[in-house]
Length: 478
Ligand SMILES: Cc1cc2nc3c(=O)[nH]c(=O)nc-3n(C[C@H](O)[C@H](O)[C@H](O)COP(=O)(O)OP(=O)(O)OC[C@H]3O[C@@H](n4cnc5c(N)ncnc54)[C@H](O)[C@@H]3O)c2cc1C
Image (cartoon, rainbow, N blue to C red):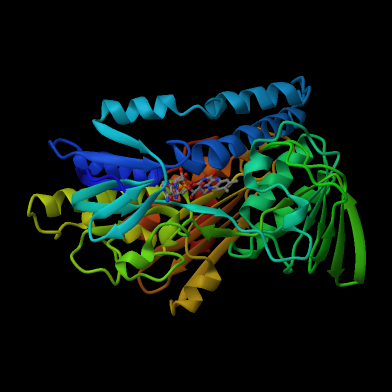
């Protein structure tokens, strides 16, 4: 350990979207100093191995499908090389200098290395010691979870990092998982020409969403040539020669999976295997024990202060607190956390709503960028009933002039979950092409607690797809 200690007002461990926002907000408009400790790339998982490359890979398939559904428009493709080049441009070929420049412009130091807690307000970074005058923020995110199946780890399967950064398209590929990452990866792999089998342990895709969402995504994947096998899980994996050929390259020989499913035991041979079986907190070498915390996800209160640590100096934001594993929610928490740190440093009370991460509770928006897209905010009907709300629902197919004009094969469905007592929206789910762009209206209605009698006066433009809102409200009046 070096004998010198460098002091900052705020130290953020983890330079992903959540950490960047916390550092910027905690120091904005002040002379407070901040450091971001980052062991890989500033910008985090989202920028290089998750949201950004996955959406770059998905969008061409969506555009191509829309063109194919539009008489008079030429639809060629996909040009796989061009798609991968555009993806590479979006991940800046894994060069984070633009993000480092952003940090410099905001007077935030980037300290390269692995950070770990060494005690109250103390952080060690590969032998260097840092001390925080005000706050330490944990923003270390998550890593892919690889289940304990015999032979699976030794087979060097692809994780989300490989499949978002793929450089060759496996001819035959199996995707283990039925959640967001599995569904999105299966969608772009199929669009790029792979023969895809999705192995789902449960009986539905996107199990946390309204049931019609997973059903429609499964039907669309099947229509795109993928095979979705429910109630099926691998019991063993064999790969004669597994080679670390690098991220996004096929990792050796074909893989044989032994499967247990509704029809008994079977085998499946593929050229690559993608594990999309959930996430694990990146807290293994974070020194949580040095401040008396157990391992795993880090629990926080609504000011994002870590529970179980006195003094209000330790915060956890983004994926690592397990509140909502989404970039926009991590950034939101980063903004709230940064504001809280600034207020506490200036001796101001935390009596304003902006110091409370209230949207983490039942108001989270999410878009699954499959084809069709699944856009949702707030509670599903099942979650609302579980939470004890008396609910009413309205659900219909999206069939308005705007949707028919947008493409000949338009198919979509929308559902509102309404709090009977308050006459406000608890949640909304829209499934269909480009539904992600329709979501923010619902988010505003849910977060704003807008009564449905008032929403009636929010008139959708004709002939836009958003006219389905009018149909929903009409169905509710009927
Ligand atoms: C394939 C995929 C697609 C996704 N698509 C979307 C999407 O479309 N929209 C969306 O909202 N969300 C999406 N997500 C989720 C999103 O990526 C995460 O919610 C988001 O990255 C979390 O941000 P974060 O800042 O908490 O953590 P991260 O982005 O994971 O950043 C954490 C950073 O901390 C660093 N770090 C970890 N430990 C240490 C340490 N001890 N010392 C120093 N540095 C450390 C890491 O290197 C990393 O840079 C996707 C996830 C995946 C896997």
